[in-house]
Amino acid sequence: MNQSMLVLVGIAILAVGTYTFRLAGPLLRTRTEVSERVETLLADAAIVLLMAVLTTTALTQDQQFAGFARLSGVIIAGVLAWRNAPFVVIVLAAALTTALLRLAGVA
Image 1 (cartoon, rainbow, N blue to C red):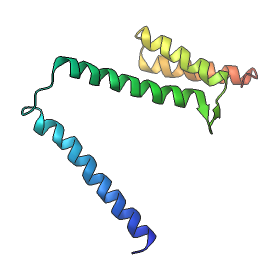
Image 2: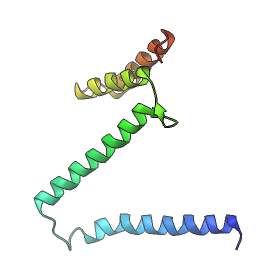
Image 3: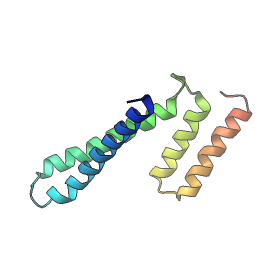
Image 4: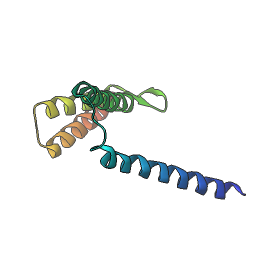
């Protein structure tokens, strides 16, 4: 079996596994009872995971610090999201903040 065939087999196995996990949720929801505490912990775990991805993406680029311009844009976006600003306003304000800081020479 050549290299490209192994890659396709790997992708197929991952696709079937992913579909199985996604299907298991709705199928087992009525058969399994999870305590309210576990549901709260799972919701909190999802938030922590998203924050870890956001932090890593916001702070690093090519395994180095991404610079204060990007960090400032992310902070502006976070503040606006916290204040329930419209999504378009959040994205434009973050992009404008980052662009203006980079134009001013802030890396």
